[in-house]
Amino acid sequence: MIDGIDHYWIWIALGLLLAVLELLVPGVYLIWLAVAALVTGALAFVLPFGWPLEIVSFNGQVVLQTMIDAAQIDIPASEWSAGMYFLRATNKAGTITRTFAVQ
Image (cartoon, rainbow, N blue to C red; front, side):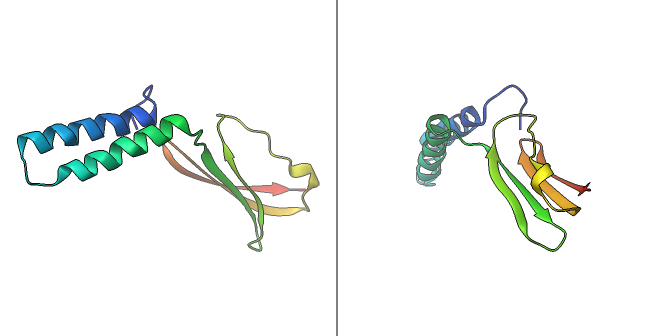
């Protein structure tokens, strides 16, 4: 993604670009892709989408699954049993996977 630009603006710009392309090259049916991109941009603007975060224990049990909006979060690991855990978070840059231990 482009730093400093909210993701809904990218969807809206893509929708407008596809609509203009439909005017320049009629009959290609780009208008439906343009409508889909504009609806996606509008929904992303209206609804508070976050980034998915999932923590799984070493034996495959999902311990925490939530949506985050902050760059830094606190994980309540004090209540978990000792062992290895895997953290997977997805953000604008991609998917981050980390392993950590609780003792």
